[in-house]
Length: 209
Ligand code: ATP
Ligand code: MG
Image (cartoon, rainbow, N blue to C red; front, side):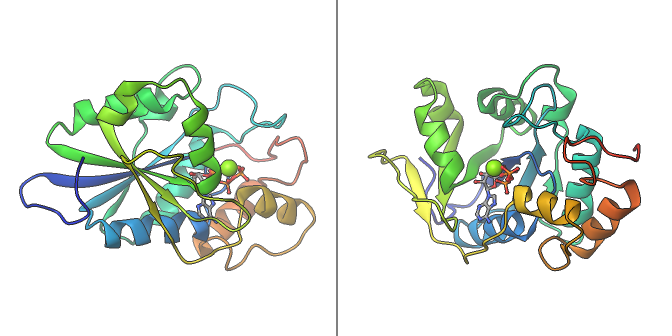
């Protein structure tokens, strides 16, 4: 298991998976804090594929979510965005994300970053031992959710600045014509307006990429 302190040669790469519909400052603060505490060289943001419904809602086109993620992370030299999940056909499973990234970065130790809510889900997945071999898991605090390592010693828990922001709330705000300024990066506010995202409750956007 990789240590909190880097030991030198191997690259330390964070992986921040998410729907990012839209990406918001909760995601960015979490990634930044883990990068700092775990001395990461890079954090790769990985927007999920778009094949099926998330909680009975149409997820925005992968290309929109990818581009918003690029806009939000562009200014940070340590943040990058990967297309592995959006370019892979079918639903996204974290095991595939990690296998692909490991293949692309064989020299790196991977740190998979998840918020408290997603952590609980991962723990409930098939106890796929390979998952734990591919990456070290870092669970971060999230307002409204309890963070629990469920007794696993190979999971790190980290308290990050509390950002009571969710993509669901951002979408609702746009639909109800309330501002999302300062909840998401400025460029993302403008991207959402430019393409008319989240105006329709079913997730259909007026604009095309
Ligand atoms: P939605 O409301 O659509 O589910 P979300 O805000 O939960 O969106 P996701 O794209 O589902 O965002 O989350 C991606 C990852 O970021 C998950 O691991 C999630 O737990 C984490 N995350 C999201 N928002 C926060 C936050 N405010 N603080 C800490 N972690 C967060
Ligand atoms: Mg979520």
